[in-house]
Length: 294
Image (tube, rainbow, N blue to C red):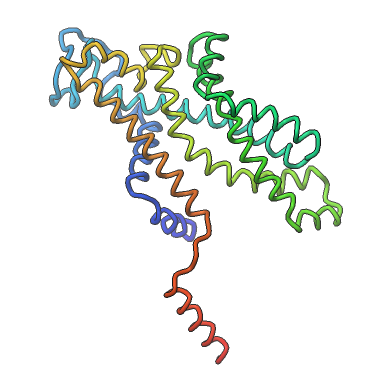
């Protein structure tokens, strides 16, 4: 119960729009197979371009597939892809960043120059280059985006690691005879992961957008797997006759990206100390004076 109260008090300071958007996105991604009212890939040309009805709440697409079912399952596709990309990118980035911050010297210089090269190239260009080498497909897209996203987490991990290694308690651990492995795994790595996870929250929206972009270009998730970018490119020829087919997946993607961006920014700001207000200072002075009298 204490953990639940602390969690609710923490989330109460976050934007409601971000919480609802991200929460809905994750809920649909986890429970999508049980929430779809129809088979997302079932085609019925006799019901193509059908408007909203009791049978199909958001209508059907150009081959008669249920739009609502495809939107829901697209959230699952994006959640799984986004999670895989972030896990792979953070695994590589945190490992390189913490090793560089721990070892310092020529090891740090060599690793960080590689990171600088990665940061100098746009993420989408790197992903397109990797896909051009290995070909299109789901797993190639995941690999391409992970290779494009790891330098950012490596840079942040290195900065946090250097800050942790310069703290007095690390020197105390060394004097007391703590092994390098204990310092790294028990003190350096946990402290680094907290800051990097905040970065990952803010970056999740960009990863979801990159997945949709590659699918829109035909280089990512291939049909008939439902995905928002794939739904957009399928609906473009029918933009004038059935704009609903373009608006709905675009709106879903926009809300997911904005939600993750707002949530990540809010979490990052909550971690930054803010000056106390005059009212709070007066209350603390009164409390301190009362304690002295007691």
